[in-house]
Image 1 (cartoon, one colour):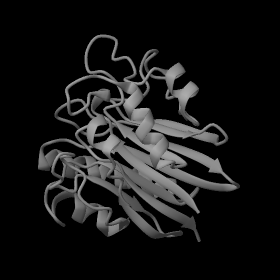
Image 2 (cartoon, rainbow, N blue to C red):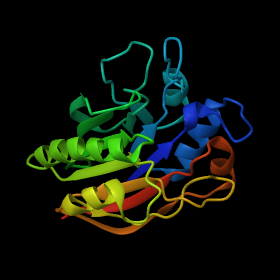
Image 3 (tube, helix red, strand yellow):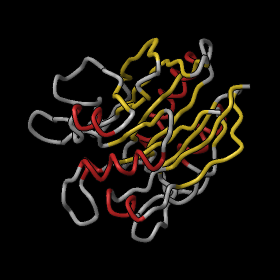
Length: 231
């Protein structure tokens, strides 16, 4: 079994409006996932530096960020990043250019952990429903191509407030949607914005929201997670 998670870390700004990367790392260690898709992993302005300094992440966790080779100081691409355990082997990685009204993107990685290969897609979709569906179409097309190489996990903040419509309907035609639970806002979770989906060839007997005192302070989103097995 592998554990995967998705977490919008809000540039490491907590519910007290203070930037504290250490709190995010504490939550990551609590989740103890093998692969984590992060959203808002970089600062928005200036050099768009990583919200969690690389040295701090490496010193205080078992994670490393997959290098995307896009911006020198950033962890991700338009804020999207993928963390893996230091023991993982990264076979390939790439950025995805998707239709956007505001700066948005998606990323992918092909990794091997414990002898199992998995393709991972991380995303943070638009606030506009029309653009979300356009982005979903582009991501679905790319993910179906990845599925020819390895089973695919798709994770991220979809910004979709509807229960089953919009881009959720589009993703559900091609992938299995897991029911993790409400993840936003941490003070009183009312929306299921953060999602995990998977292709055929993957079994997931358990999924949920990581709701802890630390998680309720570190960001305005709670992390979602799933345990998976490659069939």
